[in-house]
Length: 395
Ligand SMILES: Nc1ncnc2c1ncn2[C@@H]1O[C@H](COP(=O)(O)OP(=O)(O)OP(=O)(O)O)[C@@H](O)[C@H]1O
Ligand SMILES: [Mg+2]
Image (cartoon, rainbow, N blue to C red; front, side, top):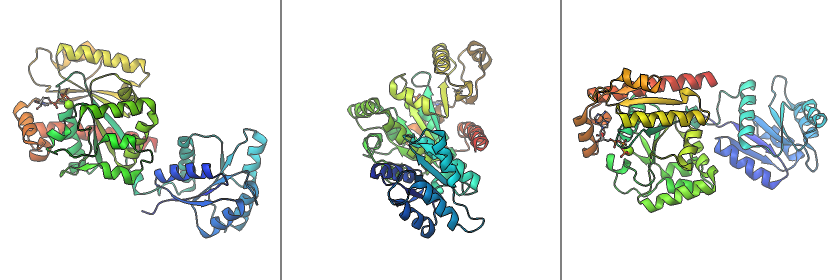
């Protein structure tokens, strides 16, 4: 699918650079003009599908340029124009709209706001259905897997759900190992010491889709992986980078969301800054637990923390692993202690789980029809259905 073409008309080189970078990251093709006259010319010859027009420019200002573009348009062909104004003054802004602009945004603006306005305008003008590029056909969901305590099967469920989403449901899926110090994916998936990792992604100031793709490791099941560093010391680099510049993690996540339907994250168990940012940015947090007292206590604490953070109840979903293993606490007991329902259950099958783990071949790949495979597939199917419904409601 061809990328949507956006024309940037601005004489300020810094703003040009920021806009070009932001738009390209979003998958748009970008044309640039440095003054009003060049803008009018490129609007005619370049056939942009949307124009960002600065107001104050040499030769021809943004108002005049907009008027000329409108005059030159054929009947029925109207390219959406957003004015970039420095004026919070209503009178000035109205002037832009009168000149023929469809919307305006006051500088300095947040890139996310600009992108939201661009998409809204494209959708209104009918171009929005042709998204920036094929990359935008993704659901772009960020789903976290967080264990209520160690060893409950968080990594097992994240890997196998990921394989099911990609192999069975044909969703483009990335699994990111955020167990920065002791990530298990290399071992569980028999990957050896692939060198690229989240460290590279976090340290890359100009990370874009092309660069990101080079850091991703492809598993034979078509699940893609962004691995943890190979040494615990390298994990400090990531944590430090996130602390000094939280935008570096946001950028990694947003590039990944644009490339994938699902960005699954296998998390370490701690409530540090890195994880709190992940929680904030996530669409859903799957808390993996087993039916024992220490898990129940931790889940209660988790739910309270999530409440305090102001998250909606539905953002946190409980996944009871080994649900039919005898612990003396059944699902009903667990639900009444927690005061809420367990959202998903995955059955207990120790031999299937451990032998897959030790052979380096996940059960979802070697035995998808085993009871354990089917149980995780049920979870993945329902989670996918809910995510797709939410995305459809927003779009
Ligand atoms: N549904 C299941 N039935 C039986 N055994 C399971 C199941 N899920 C996971 N296991 C086993 O539990 C053990 C721990 O699994 P896993 O490493 O996935 O847990 P984790 O929560 O990621 O642990 P860690 O805290 O070390 O990251 C493994 O031996 C795995 O085979
Ligand atoms: Mg784990």
